[in-house]
Image (cartoon, rainbow, N blue to C red; front, top):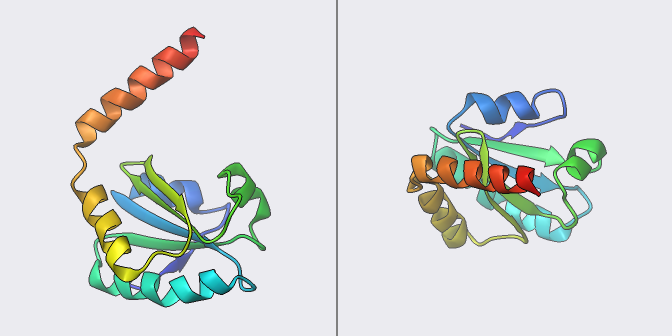
Length: 125
């Protein structure tokens, strides 16, 4: 599978409708983004069960702002609709594989329990 462009129109639905979604926030003028792009693309062919999406931060400024992107490239990983990883910087292929393995290995029942506890705590303040 190749990477797919994500926009404000399809971002949320893509994250909610798929088990694992990796998102690369990038811009054409960004050197590190251009370095990371083929690494991200290669991983998409190695892991066809994962959705690999790219958000052009220039074209999707509102989406990027809403996601809190302050540095590019930024990689985000969603599992079961929950943000489970976010890190700026171009990753080497080995580090991207570690992120993928970590996301695959998550105990999602535990993650959902922690998210619920955090939301309860935030609601109480």
